[in-house]
Length: 332
Image 1 (tube, one colour):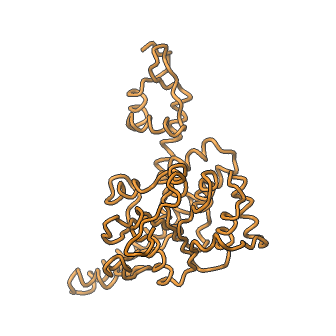
Image 2 (cartoon, rainbow, N blue to C red):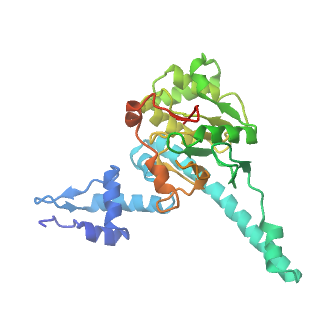
Image 3 (cartoon, one colour):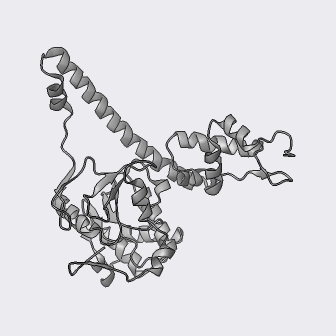
């Protein structure tokens, strides 16, 4: 391969790092790792690339997404601190859940030690918890039960045209007493005088967003002090750069911020690589099978179908104005 001294082939590098060759290619695809090339054009990894790859592997083992790792490795100190703080908050929530599970297991063991009751009864008494969101699915479904065990800071509702996303979003708003931010927001003159709105808009513009009326209306609608928000078609009338900045802004909100449920079909808003433990995915199938929660990893039931509903802002711009009509009622 004519590789310089101290340079490793992909197979040697993957073995040294304890990862697959496919993972090395994925890091390269995301711009995180740039291998050197031999005179024959073969990829090789020198000491600098191996050191960087070890950092990527270490951060991945901490549960960080590739997008978060990019910010940590290539951003300035403040950007890196923000990304690490967001991930730390996510891990803290996971620790709280684990602590609760640990406590529940201890309570079950105590009951079994003290009582002669059946194990199933002991477990049911201690660890059965009501879901934080529970409702009957509206038309076009047949009233099936829809539940979310724990309401997370961000819940994305995804599905093809006509799958009932907007109706589900409205039902969630009613069930939670949340503020529903519908498409009529685009017809209103946004109130941009509050400090919260101005701060958010300034942050978004620094990240590349356009200070458009649509973005202003959205940010203003999310600054009313509601306990939770449900947003229909969040990317409406926003250009690609604005959607990318908005997706990042949504993910970096603190854990004390009100939860947001949103319908989307944009990869700029829902970056599956950046999906963490503080985000929930809900899929609405095209055939009106019951909407359900999808776990955020490859191979999980429904994950591939959900991912196929997403596309870049450029693709959706070419289909702007298209609607599916079901029994005379528009449905997105």
